[in-house]
Image 1 (cartoon, helix red, strand yellow):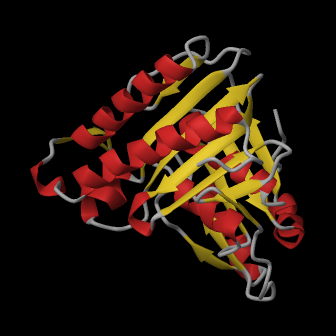
Image 2 (cartoon, rainbow, N blue to C red):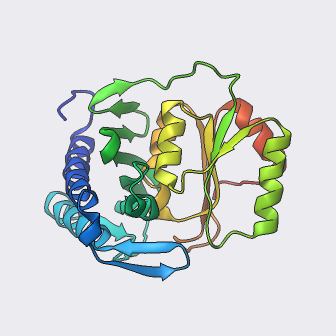
Length: 261
């Protein structure tokens, strides 16, 4: 990508993500032969996750040697300094089952705020990139969110094995009672990209992690959605995110006291 409206840092991050997406896709196309293990119930890690994260880490160390790095598979520590956050394959369950709904996510976080986001959806042949205050790009070209058919109300919900099921059910019921259709993609990255594209009115996730949202949050923000990221604690595994249109967020707030922290 060489678009003049993209900063050099965003261009390089986009190139790294594109190369990582090619690597991930090569594993996807031969996934019958890759090794898989389980971290906990319904939370899998594959040989592909590890290989893609190793590749991205090596590229970041080469091009941004002074920045920190956090990855889902190999960890890291969040500080106030610039820190790249990697989800090598978000939606590993989808990946393993052959669904196209998985992605490679790379975000830059400064002072606990995502400021650069790049998300590649390899099977769909799309990559979205954004930087705070500079708009959003699809496959290297400026992109404007599709706001048509706003009366067709659709929202995606993220889920987690750590969800409190009674609270999650009440939240779902509140959205349905307000006449919103609810979808679940089992991939936070896809949920946030689809919201940024305009396929849905937003993505809501009451329990998530920093690597799940570091790339997608910037895309949603720059697409014009109200985007709230909440750190429940200092734990980068304990976050919440809501990104949505004004109409959606007006429904969400009485159901969920989401406070940015």
